[in-house]
Image 1 (spheres, rainbow, N blue to C red):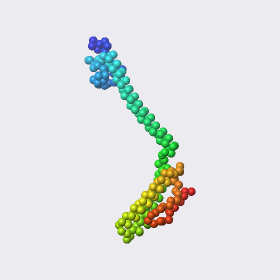
Image 2 (image 1 turned 135 degrees about the vertical axis):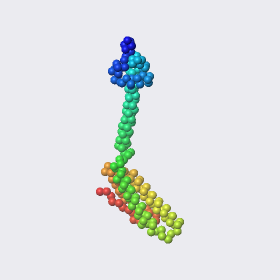
Image 3 (image 1 turned 90 degrees about the horizontal axis):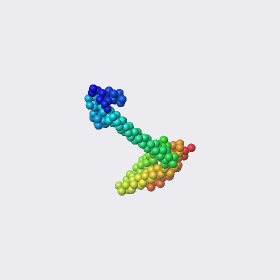
Image 4 (image 1 turned 30 degrees about the horizontal axis):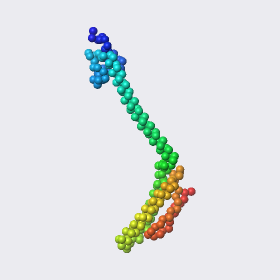
Length: 189
């Protein structure tokens, strides 16, 4: 009787053992994991060994993905710890601390820029030759740039405190066009 060939297993028995459909089992046979069935019967030993190897391969692939995911997680944790360490060493300043400080420096620089351009440079250019205008413009640019450098370097020398505020100190500007009174900002209380 062809149904009971020794050393073979029926498709129904194999689906019951593996939990796969007959179509899936045939696809695995086509892919070369085990020999093709003959009249709905699979060679038992070769088919089961091939199926076990197939499952092991799936497990290796899954573990490979898991290992890659674990490596990414480990790298992310390491980066996080490095950042924490650098923050503790004061190599970085948090955004919540630096934001108000930068706004303070920026507003001061804007006020200086506006004062120099509107009150000191513009009124003094009337009646000058182009060469004299260029010379005064260069001096104004130098003054503005030095003011910006001083603001930034002053902030970098004494970074914001834990409150997120920068202590503001008196600033004296050496202005080549006109020697104005120094700009004095209020010290924090």
